[in-house]
Image (cartoon, rainbow, N blue to C red; front, side, top):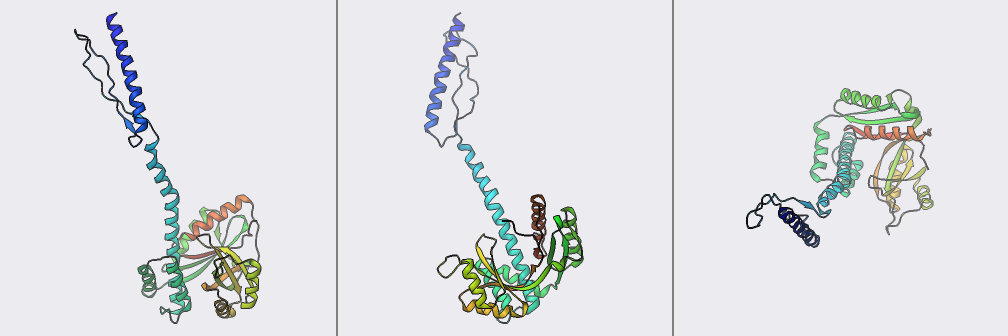
Length: 310
């Protein structure tokens, strides 16, 4: 009976000591774990003292340990995708620079499209070495421009601009992406589009205020453009796209500059003349396919005739 009473006394002491340790650890938040000495009587000596100790047990007292996990989660889900999008944007700029050099030479003083691209690259903080490498690459590596016609989910039509140093490789890989994601290479998609001149400018005025669509239409008339559309760039900033026929592209751009709307890009693009409206399922599949194609290293731009959803 004496041994039983002694054991109960030790257990009571352990509980009190454990509660005291937990209270003190709740105040010291920087220490996420405390290690109270868990005393267990393994033998009772003649003098009644208990000298044997069990290993210490770690007790979790706060959620502080998960802070690192949350931080990494933010980096992985926010910073990671942004960095990947930034890298893709720089890769697209490199392709566009190569195409501009191919069409107009490597001197920005005589190649206005190249000069605009370089200015845009600098505005997006693209490294100077990357810009120079793209210009040198265009001169040292001959590239071929191609336009692929394709069908996407729901009967949508796609035009895919390619600039590549290996047309066979690009053709096979684009074909594989299409076949695996509900699309196919085919003839006839080109008839759903018309080649137009497109001048892209910022959608903000000199005071940093968004230009209303009504005012944008007035500016389009003054500049001699056929139409103007509001859109968003890669950073979700509002931009304006002034559409004109090909012979008027340079004149429209000059007039917009004179009206205080600096040009971001001015180049030929394909504008859909007939559009299709897709179901939600086909719309999701089409956007996924377009994103996969756009991420391919040799793709300049993907055009579609999918009707905008309100």
